[in-house]
Image 1 (tube, rainbow, N blue to C red):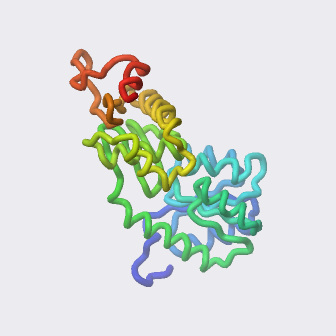
Image 2: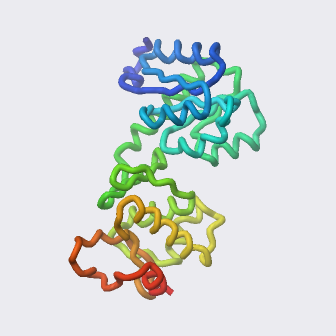
Image 3: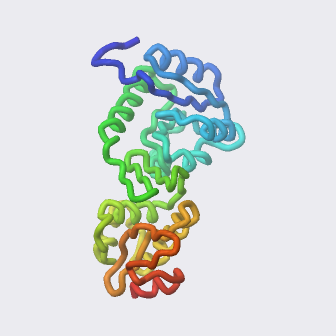
Amino acid sequence: MNETCGNPAAGMTVAVVDDDPDIGNMLQQVLKQEGYRVLRAYSGSEALLLMERESPDLILLDLMLPGMSGSDILPRLCHIPTIVLSARSDPEEKVNLLMSGAVDYVTKPCYPREVLARIRLQLEHRARRKGSVLQFDMITLDPERRIVTVAGQPVHLTRTEYAILKVLMTNARLVISRDRMMAAIEEDTPDCEESSLKVHIAHLRNKLRQCGGQDYIEAVWGIGYKLKAPVAAGQPDASGLQGSEGQTESTAE
């Protein structure tokens, strides 16, 4: 086991998703030698089943898998740092995979020490950012893993919905104007236009409500949007804006 500068692998789990037994066995061997716990999956569907019962710290994902490909399942693994391993070297495909949620891309045939270095880099980066998790009532947003949960239940958001929620949670006690919201999310979602912002917020509100049973986003008349604490059953809504979703949205016009 490599003891240089401590052992960052201690207590860490890596899932290897590759249908090639030779490559998978090689990766498993070098990972175990470094002290990682290793999980294995040989197809896309098997990987998804594995993630239902395990929560690895990182995934090594091959693209050419039987059945569901690595590209097919990657968006469903965005809550876990995923390094793609592939013989494909097309730059455009690499960009698309990174935009779809991969944190890194290694071209096969891969050098074991390079893979270990990239794994260590991702895990160290994640550890440095661990304290940045945002919390509001039952909503948790982890910027490092790009995962959102409500009452412990994962919520699958689009890039725009995620960016909006991150702005609202970063400024949880403030009303965010439309102009400020657009400026804040522009880097993450340059394709979002002001005319569609209302629609994105409505979709985000519905997803949060479905998981938490609460309406967490409040439209403030003439200004913009803010997060609001849930109202206890039987208690009046202090904001004075409680009502149907359509009524609430219209107040922001």
